[in-house]
Length: 205
Image (cartoon, rainbow, N blue to C red):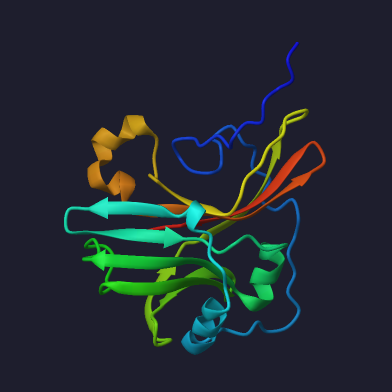
């Protein structure tokens, strides 16, 4: 029998997390003793200037009057652990010509940064002057363990776009079924019989 060939990561219709995955929310408690600092726009811009980005993992969403391009940073170790006390840079976002109606941003380059504030994840887009241009709520942070015994599995940081529903509901929901959600795979590393992935789902960007 021929050896199994390396396979690329499968991408389902919803996002980077398979609908077949089992969720264990609350299986591990996260405790924070003290007050977490909140990064300013200038601090976020300084972080972005020192960051290397992974163009191979970029995702572009095109509209009738322009486009949005999302470029993730090169993967880092233990991003979720760092995200709680330090925040986490999710991607560079380039608005070409005109952003869609649900995004109130002028053409240009922005850096989207995630912070844990008052018990929830909040994202801010910072422009090239270090000014906060917009704020997003409802970010979902996930750690995913994928089991693939005996198979070689290689991945990198990347961004994909996805809808908030399954294809069968798109006809009923129309534009609301795909209002600019993106999944950001910040890190991937092999572990045991599979691999760990750190994923952040960002709505409406």
